Length: 277
Image (tube, rainbow, N blue to C red):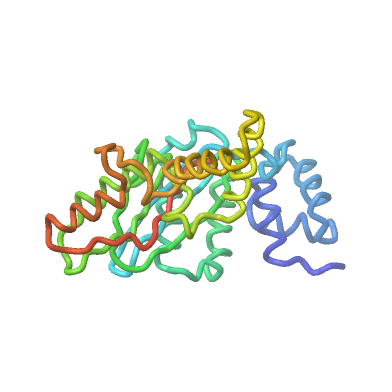
């Protein structure tokens, strides 16, 4: 007889929404075969006909939580928007976010705990629930949650690592830039950190489009350079037009704000989670 592992029990709980002991019994009866164990639970009337773990979970929430060490951002998915507005689901998301926050960057150390919490919630809520992704950023960061459905719970979440030298109050400017990031969805901080594959693909697309114009090669190269500048303005944060003042790029705004406040402002990183992306 095959040995039943804790991971197999967790997997069966996700599939069926059944309790831990029922899942252990089912696996023991079915030689640790997940599909047979699920069928066994169905026959006993313990599991529903459809596996919860196979149902698509495209709704849910993005959550942000901070403490003295740093800030965590988490995305938890549910099947329906109705569940994402449920207080029990809110409590679940906050609990998992707190666990991620306390684990800092060592997410592997709490994965089993999170899986267990989600398995219990699936049984109560009756929908597939998925821990999609998380990130922890050390130190003091600016944050923003868009389409808020609760305290630091929403559909889009942003973390911004913004610093000033010498230190000044960045609460308002940090939140404003976070709101900009939420609205525009930049793909990278600057041109050098933009994925080379994205640049190559865009360059090739534009080249093919320009060839259709019948213009000479040198003219095409000049037009290509202009169109790529425009592309970088759309997808690179520091090159984007600031939504609050479109006359300035984000880079210009940081320079001007720094000069007005006798400090140098620098963005070292940002994180943007949008539900379902």
